[in-house]
Image (cartoon, rainbow, N blue to C red; front, side, top):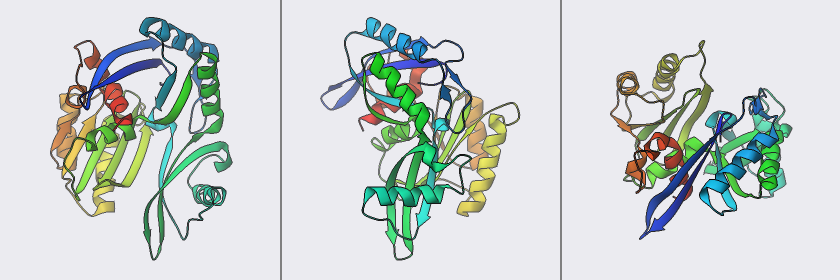
Length: 286
């Protein structure tokens, strides 16, 4: 789901292979979401409820759903803290305290998921993914009203990456992942399967895609002290051949475009327009 639409992707598993059963989309009413710091506010619950009910009418009975939201609705931070307490409540407070310096709103307003990436004698490296609690709570209520049970809520981009790594050979090298949508742009670098950089930006006339690609390339060259990646994976419906050529040139790396047909079986021509949604959906099960 994003501010403009709901996309329902349904899968089946045939001999350990992911197969797309169907893809259905619904256009949300204008101004269903509005503004909001970090995560937009849901201001028209009825629009989401109506969309869910219409999708169910078109696709049959189903009740449990994994919900994927745009990367730009989340803040994804790789934190380094001295220690990580074993008690969940105390660990959460450590993460909240570390986030205070990087977020435009109070960390207490966020729902936070965390995962320890690495423990060293010098401290603990933690991946923290957060979104505004008010919005997530409103979304969950809308799904409940429509008769659905949300199993999990996660970013689209990380699940596209899950789908990629489940099918690619293991490596210890640095790999670049770019997810490009019409209004936002995600950059991630993985060393092996460990994230070392994650960032999502909203695109605008002041911050167009080409500028974001160039700024990201310049920053990563300096931060990682490297001018080349093992592979650059490029995902999203907004990707064009010109975009792929620019990425290859700016990052001086081979580019591999991610298409749903490479990830799952049963991708019909009609469904091919939902490459990112299908790939991310498959990543949920990877």
